[in-house]
Image (spheres, rainbow, N blue to C red):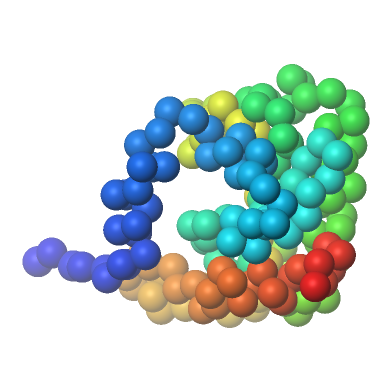
Length: 165
């Protein structure tokens, strides 16, 4: 018996010209006009890095800290870039704790295709808020994650902790 998961939001992604582009999505969004930051889910732009909500989150509030420069691993980043990434990780930790009232967090890098990187050429740090009991029967029985909040609402909820309105 074939099971189906209705996910209409995926249609726009798989049929969009952006899904077929050779260009890096992180490079594109990093160069985008700051007036489009909410639409692009960017929460903060630093000098070397930016904070963005993951468009295809594992859980609501799933953040990415991304260097503007297209590099695939930590050793390729300048000290200033690495330092800013970690400072933003501290800020993001506070934003997730205060803004989303999470009880824990997961975070890390997936470096290279073998390491699970979906975009292996552009390093990014994942930060995921976690709550006691956030894994439920859907995950256990159906191997399905339920994301209970829209990206726009998560952006509005976290934006004040990054200096946004």
